[in-house]
Length: 604
Image 1 (spheres, rainbow, N blue to C red):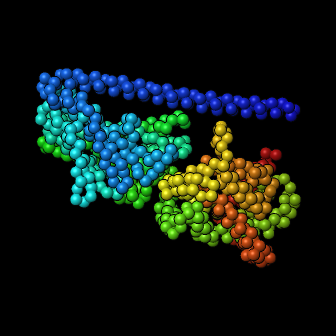
Image 2 (cartoon, one colour):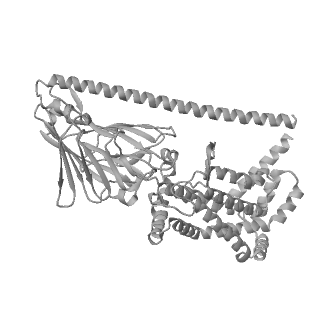
């Protein structure tokens, strides 16, 4: 084929790729919109059916108690606002529960206070009760009486709601808001348990709405998960959308990047079973991130009057705060989960304490990250030095390797055998330079989790980045490039350029340049890094920029002022004069290479 034909095929391939990408994306969007419309229609129908049932129940029970059940169904909604230093909570007598929860110390993407429960978002708690007429009603649709606020001697505030029923039973919701606390105590007291609840079973339905709080909804949507503590073990769902609980559950949490809403079973209580269904809204233009439908069961004590204690947490994913809420709740913060759980100890016991120490003495988060980088490079410096020493030894052997290749010719198998023999005689480990690269893998995953979940970085500016918890953007395209994004991150560019310089230096220290893939690797890797780094948190790309600059400085200093190349060459010659003993691994390797060589000769 001539050049024009090749170019034509390449262009056709690119057009086909673009068509498949766009058609797949559009089909996914249409499917997501279809599911969202179907969910909305089903919810409307369910609500209409419930309201019709309520009206029927009211008509059938009015003759029993004109001012009883009819009043709680057709009541008037009334609000009561309670505040402490951290929360502003608006309680409603409809359902006897919080209708709005606002975090006073955190701002959303639109500069308004973060609301974890917002009016009109169908964020509610409910459970069913039996009526005297044989019907079933949902608490969230009923109007409680009362709503009295009592200020206690310890500074806490208590709100109480009462729901009377025709048979003389009653339900009491009591909420206690303590000073400087994100957690609210919620006690459900039932008078006439055996009549209100079938077999004393409490079926709690939690409809949780997750709204946007960050500048970049796509990043926040990706980091949503549902966490729980089942059978004394923490777990979560992120990619999967459903989970059934068959063992005792202590708490459940709808978790965003930096905030969470959690339902905790109180002292001596736990949920005996249930299920959850998590649905993400994948529409990039929507401020709705996800919805969770949670259904849990527990039981009242076998008594005429009994209470169930719960706690509601509305607050930040702050390690110190969550540590005092319930067992295992610190794992809500993604410092390493699933296949990456091996990096969590690195974060919890090394990176987080060191970073918090620097931050306690320095106002700038950017400078604290710089000092954290210096600390990490300091503790890994012995391995880095051994890597550079190994590279210097490899460089000293380069003339002999080149001469050996000319002698052997194009027989790559023989080249490998001769090269391994030369390394063994000189006492050089060809894998010695790989240690820092391997060491970077757990450190990278640890820092990736740490910077993505550290709420202290949220809204903190440094240099040209207005928010270290997300990517910086010095140029916005107005359109999205597949695999890259719709912006240019300057920190990402700096990290990629410095990585490119490190790659070039590493190639100059590598004796084997015959492999075409290795020759082009310094040019291929920066492109791959640019695609990956462009959407990372600027705290992480700033760390990598600083780390790469330190690497370049260390390379120059160690190679020019610390390592004596003449001594290395003399040491290599001395090693070659010593008698050598082969390890079993070397013997097996040589036997395998010799067998391959003989097989190749036989085929020829």
